[in-house]
Image 1 (cartoon, helix red, strand yellow):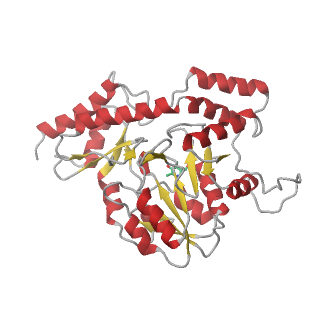
Image 2: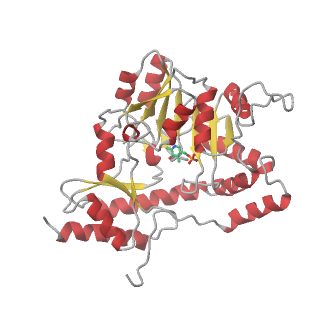
Image 3: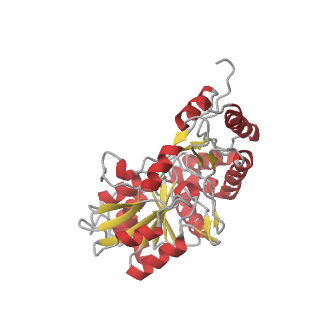
Length: 372
Ligand SMILES: *Cc1c(COP(=O)(O)O)cnc(C)c1O
């Protein structure tokens, strides 16, 4: 494999402005969780989502945990979650002592199926977490109707969907609370980091206390609640501020990458493109395809051949109801099929058009020249 140019699945490139803000923060000495960048980042993010408050946290998982604690979720409660998501969505429920109840995906959006949510509601159901999977918003209109009908609050897990829109409204502003992640490979990054958005002052105050050891907000070192150390550092927030300054460009690039993939792949027999519904702005955190029976080789064989050409791919999330720590014995056919047949192609923002062409040409050639 001489001179084979590798195309990884993810490739984080920090810019000069990122480095400059980090340098400024480090030189100021405010390297822990106090300092001007934390407040600035939270203000910028609340504005971006159109919410009153944004409370930063150590990561997207701690954000979910705090959002559920703000709602008073406790042992004995049930929380509805999609099965097709990253493990954190369900683990955060477990951390509160409540039980995650897994729901299948809607085949049109890959997101939690609204009709199945309603069927799973009972007197123990205390919250519904919806995930905007891979950057495609969930069906918020129907989900909010269910939420209102049964008076059960929504938490949006928007870890993969910064800036995505449903009916022209930004995700993170639909639920009673919403959470985001700034892990390295997410739409924007702070290295590790998370944030919670909400319009509720009560939730904001409770979360602020819980992320800081449960310390009273009026009396130092006085602890009225069991809290956590879930704070974001000023260094991480400095990176966050500089990333937020160009978040619109990053999202634009993600959408351009998806459009080019779509253009090159849309007429290939046996390749199905990812969801992109009319009333949404999908930010395409990852670009996923699924293989049907019409494709001449199996998904695993295709992944193998891409790998031989230096191209990395990534599996979709194995449904949570099949994970060893949950394994409920349920049959949820839509998400099981997605996992079976789908995978992600490289879609990081420094990916070149020529890289995309190289990837799609390999797929096209297999489709054209290899008939079984
Ligand atoms: C990344 C992710 C999280 C967790 O975020 P961390 O910052 O890694 O803790 C939660 N939910 C979903 C859907 C994610 O993709």
